[in-house]
Figure 1 (cartoon, rainbow, N blue to C red):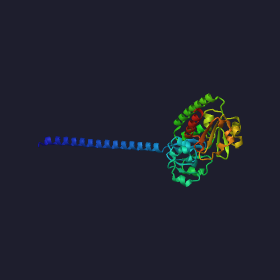
Figure 2: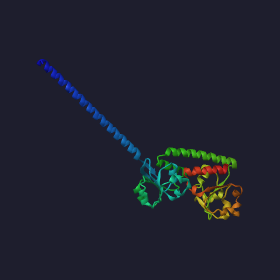
Figure 3: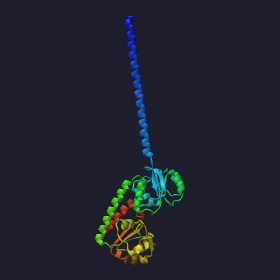
Figure 4: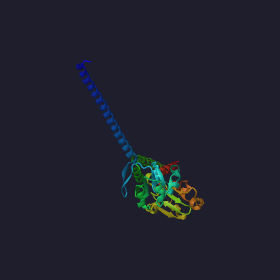
Length: 322
């Protein structure tokens, strides 16, 4: 080949080879950069998902701020368990009284019964949140096991207590919506009852274990919050004088009639002795004579959470209005 032609040809081949190598290097660099971006995005998404699943928030408890899970998944409720269950909270441990309540049997399958004394059992349950009473034993030790929020019984009314549980479980909006709806519905039922029996109609709530009788005030569960606070019904003057302050007042059978209003809500155990209902003292009470007695089951009526309140509202609507 002519040497004059060979030199330009060699130069052209060198240029082409250099360009090809540069293109390959550029592609490799672009690919590496893309992989790095994808890895970074994946890591960011993983971190975000992790924060979402295991995130925390600061809950303002009555004793100060507590760092709690944003969405707790393993709750031990030594108190206020019915409030948690009404919001479909996931319990792994519960107090014995809630466990025995017929309204919650289906929701407590597999849940362990524990008390503040059962520290080892609580540790084994691996809770991410503990709810306790402010006077619970071993409070400092409970706080070492998991974030612990304590409530003082009676410090909040029944609706605000439910709202606090809603805030704790990150369900404040749906809790407030239920509260607003419940207040409206119960107020309407109260108006219907007064329209039928008069604005001054009175109702008493008695509980008995067949040996003793107790007349209840307006915030002692057994439907008292529904009747007196939500429906706005009246209690007899003697009940107001003796039971409204302390919450309940112990009665002897001989004076029952003095404390019974136009209607009587009787809370008693379905398994208990009801022989007192066959006595002349009982039969001569005007509300009994007029068939104005509404019976409720004590075991199912000892709380003031939404599940219990809705259950009792249904019974009262039927008992008063038919």
